[in-house]
Length: 242
Figure 1 (cartoon, rainbow, N blue to C red):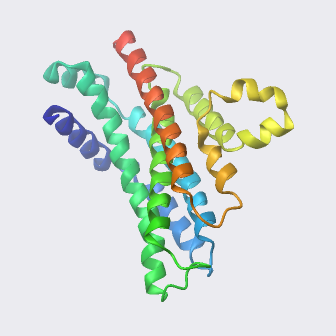
Figure 2: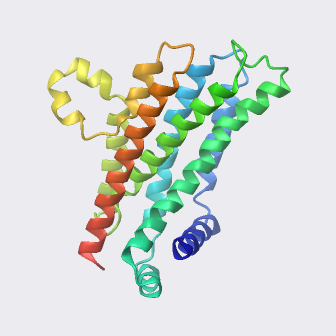
């Protein structure tokens, strides 16, 4: 665990040492201020939208983190820890930490805004139960988004332009999957390969309150999907070496 923690700390240091975190952060700030300047807003609706935002932001972040990985530094780290498992777990942990950080921002910001506006930000009183469900949903989307963004690692797909295009395409198809299946029924036979992010809108699209059981199921599906993508990417990178 110590080696994983040290590698994760180093990965975060490298990421924040650059400037690629600035634009995603700006996007998040703009969204937060735009979303919560018009009062009141629906609790469930606003957090569902935040989940989709975080998914796209972490796809972006996953792409950035993967693109910045230096093959020489990767080899040095692998030689130092002498464990491919520790190394690849640390890479997943970097994205998980970034995702949880973004999730905290997107959930706590409206909570603070609600308090500053005498609890008049939302259409109904915000409860701790709402905040818990919102964080679970947003965190699940962050993990899946990061895993999807980092899937086409440079050692998985050397053509970076094609990798970016495919990642963006998969992200967009993920969000509009439900609508596509309704318009093109045949699409359902291949739609299963996409992340289940659209289930959030399907379940909570017209809801006024959260259901912890449903939230837990969505989170489990998102976490499992993200874990599968991480395993696939790690196995391909390990097999292809450098």
